[in-house]
Length: 291
Ligand code: NAP
Image 1: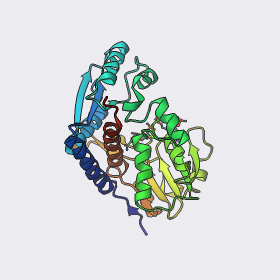
Image 2: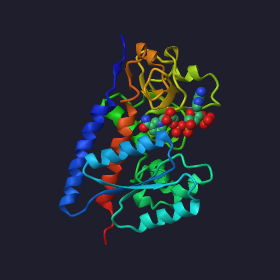
Image 3: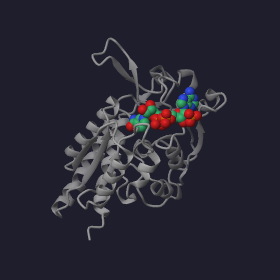
Image 4: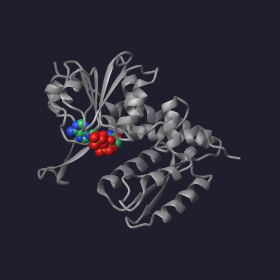
C-alpha cells in the first residue's frame, strides 16, 4: 500500500494561526513583534527563502525589517549591523540568511547575535541550551520535524530514528531533539563516512533524510511501513520547467511504495520550518526585557 503523504502545510497553517493570535495579543500591549532579516548578495535560493519568511511574518501580523547588503560587504560591516540590531528595542529577532559569502566567518557572525534574539537557534548558547534541555530557541527545521511527528501522533518512544546528515543546522540538532526524554527515540546519525548506508536506513522506524543529495534514499533503502521525513530541498535542472529547474528532495519519490508515511517536497518540512521561525519570533517578543 502506498504511503500516507504527510501534509506539512496543513499542520504549519494551524501553528501560524496560533502565532497570529499571540502576535495580536502583543499588539494590544503596544508591542509589534519584529524580525530583522539580513541577506547578503542575491543567491536565488536564499532570496526565495527570505521572501517566503517575510511574507509569512506579515501574514502573522508581525513586522520584518528587510536589510540587504551586497555580496561583497565586509565582515566588519555585518558585525556593526548586528551590534545595532542587538541594541534596538524594536527588534525582537535577528536572522542572517545562510550561507554567507566565503570571505565572511559564519561562526563569528552567528556568535555576535544576542542569544535573546537568536530566533534561528544557531548561537552556541542556544545550541547548549538545546542539548541540556533548557529553555531557549530551538532551530527551526529540526524543531519543525519533531513537531510534525508529534502532531501526527507517530509513535516515537523507543522507535529507531535514523538521521542521514550531520550538519549543525539540521542533522545534529535533530538527532539531539529526537533523543531527548520527551521524544525518547534511539538515534543513529549517518554521514559520508558511514559504511553501507542502506544497512542503517533499513533499520529505521523513522528515517530522516537531510543530506542535500537528490533522491539519495531509494525505495529499497526503506523498511516497509517506515515513516520517511524528507528534509532535502535540491534544485535539479529541468528544461521543461519555466524556471529551468525543479525542486527535488533527498528521497526518491518511489520510496512512497515502501514507506508508511512520507513527506512531500515541497509541502512537507519546508512549511514547518517557517512556522517554527514565526513561533520563535513571537516567543522572543513575549519574553523580551522591555525595561
Ligand atoms: P549540509 O550542510 O550540506 O549537510 C549535509 C549532510 O549530509 C552532511 O553531514 C553530509 O555528510 C551528509 N551527506 C551528504 N551526502 C551524503 C551521502 N551520500 N551519504 C550520507 N551522508 C551524506 O546540508 P544541510 O544544510 O544539513 O541541508 C541538508 C538538506 O536539507 C539540503 O537539501 C537543504 O537544502 C535542506 N534544508 C531544508 C530545509 C527546509 O526547511 N526544508 C532547511 C534546511 C536545509 P558529511 O558531514 O560527511 O559531509
